[in-house]
Image (cartoon, helix red, strand yellow):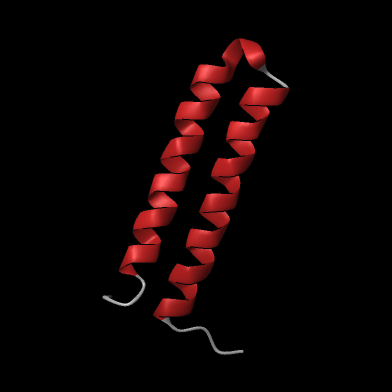
Length: 59
């Protein structure tokens, strides 16, 4: 499997989105005392994954 720039951006956006969802869920379920911080950081990861997905066809 040959990875070009678009494939790398696609995989990176998928991984970042998964990490963001995991952080939001950790904040909501396990660490309720620090839920605000976990949710903010998780939302940031999701936003960066979204930006990578938007860059996928343009770089």
